[in-house]
Length: 221
Image (cartoon, rainbow, N blue to C red; front, side):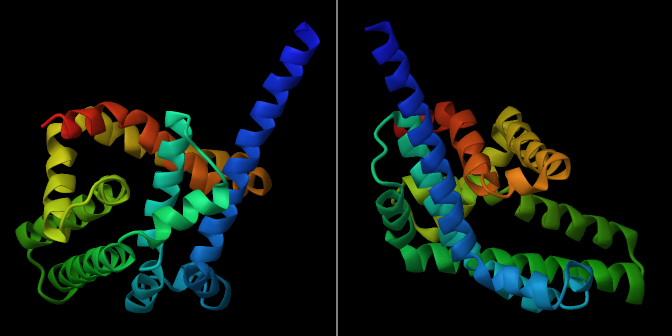
């Protein structure tokens, strides 16, 4: 009986590992444009080809939302087939998520253009600092944006406002999201071959796990 129980635990663990792996593979497939950019243009050319790079990043919006949707189901213990869960999270409100991603990329492009202008062309430290801060806020709000888009039926403007608000009113969770990102990067540096198989789903899991309290508070408002 004890042996049977141990086998069930091992099988359960293997199922979750497979779930992580399949969701990550689907996430990678969904982001083929940015992979092609890195393959044929190269990471070293991102600054020179920033508009093209940001366009290639737009598909990451529904893809990241789908990962977070699947990881939230895993945390709640209601996960089903990984492909079905990912597809549901990806397809639901797809246009809204794509528009949200396009809007974020546009904000990043505008901020970076102004940073370049006020640091190179017309040197003005206060304005340069202002746009650097806006750029940082736009980047740091990313997990909040797609966590909200994956979980709630809200308008794009409301999602953006809530994501930025959470960034400041929940600094502990913001710091947690940053730490989660750097943990994934550190794991990639240590073992790139293994980490690349799970990095998308692992990041989504960490974000959704740490923000369970935030989501419960939002649901009770």
